[in-house]
Amino acid sequence: MNIQIPETPVRAKLAPSLKFALEMGPLVLFFAAYSRFGIFTGTGVLMATTVVALAVTYWLTRHVPVMPLVTAVMVLVFGGLTLLLHDDTFVKMKATIVYLLFASALLGGLLFDKALLSVAFDSVMRLTEEGWRKLTWRWGVFFLAMAGVNEAVWRYTSLDFWVKFKVFGFVPLTILFALSQTPLMLKYELRGEDAAKAPEHL
Image 1 (cartoon, rainbow, N blue to C red):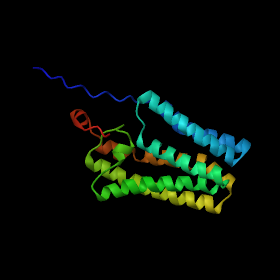
Image 2: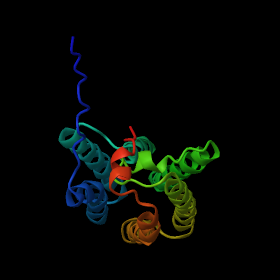
Image 3: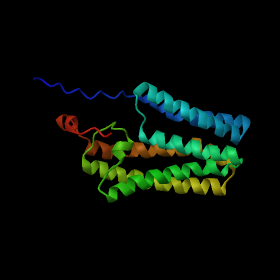
Image 4: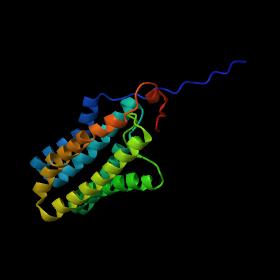
């Protein structure tokens, strides 16, 4: 008697350009709405477009990556508080909370010998265990630093400066930091048969 084991379906991947557009779209529309109508309309647009971007991601891949999902939940929670209480403090604090959550998860995972960055990055690359540990440590520290920067910016500058820095400061800083990690990723990248044998992270 032959027993056939069903193959694990290959998870669809978004094209890098589309993935970037879905991640950046809500932020760009938030900035545009804020510039024209103010922070509360901008917050509402951010909430709505974040949900749309998440829905499109799921529709195309039948999967929602961890980091966008967490970010979306925080946008809805703190954006909702901003609109309900008519207080922009909450939407400004959102980035701090998100960065601290990511940092706590990554650095806390290392305490239990778990490099959780492979999950957060949705298995888009294959690294050795040492590579994942080092990259996880670096991103954890980076997220802590970004939380501190957001706190300083929203507390000690104007709302207009914070909104502009959110778009034209945080995004370039994150891209530059990610690019700076390329040598480490190339050093510890698994290739050939080793990459094929590396387990998928759910």
